[in-house]
Structures are given as C-alpha cells and as structure tokens.
Length: 171
Image (cartoon, rainbow, N blue to C red; front, top):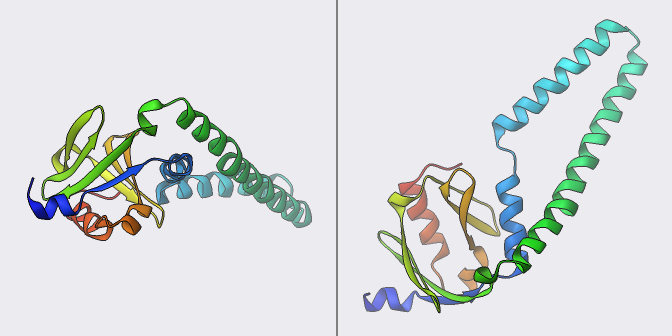
C-alpha cells in the first residue's frame, strides 16, 4: 500500500442507523417500479369509472386509494423496514466490528480484526447512492454499504462516488 493510500485509510464501525439507511436505500423504488404502480392505479380507476359513471364516488376512491397507499408505504418504510434493519444489525456481529477502509484505483480495501479484503470494481454489478449512504452491489440483492459520514472522518467519499460512476452502472 502506498503512503497516499495509507493516509486515506479511515477507521470506523457500522452503526445501527447505517444499516437502517442502507436498507431504506436498497428498498427505494426505481422509476420502473413507480411506473408499474401508476399503471395499476390507472387501470383500476379506468375500470371503476366505466363500471359506474359517478365522479364523486370515483374522487373518493382516488383519495382513499392514495391515502391508503401512502399510509402503507410510510408504515413499511419507517416502521417494519426500520425495525427489521435494527434487528438484523443487532444479530450481525461482523457488522459491529471496527474496520478500516481505503480507496484504491482498483476499488476499496477493507481491514478488520478478522482479516482484510479488496473489493475490486470488476467484482461489482452496480451502485446506488443518496446523501447518507452509497451501496455497492455484488449481486442483485447483496450490497456493501459505505456511509457518507466517513467523509467527516477524512475518507474521500466524493472521489469514491466519481470512481464508482466511472466503472459501474447506477441502479
């Protein structure tokens, strides 16, 4: 490892909130998912309108469906998903180990008390990011979370995002 890479090495420990944010980002619907839900809603509303031409009843159906959908999504995202992510983190001892990470031209290198590994860009199939987290996908449903809070510790988070964008498709 070069001295420049050693200087970019940052020690951290995943927190429960990191795991929650990673699961929320992973569960976020992509544009295709939103289009699918919109198509289902439009189809249901079309059938409801042609069955009974009562616009007032249709307005109540639209409002009720939208309110129920929003409530269900909020309960899932902020209730069930959050609780499951925290429970999974609590039962996942390897996630709670302190580790160090450094950015290399070929990918990321992780170090912990259990050993070290080099996650190369060629081993990944995609990525997804928001303002709190970056997920590096090793398989369609398996990912390595990289918290944005590492930037405050000196990790070159923006440089990593640029490198990821140059090597991988966004999911």
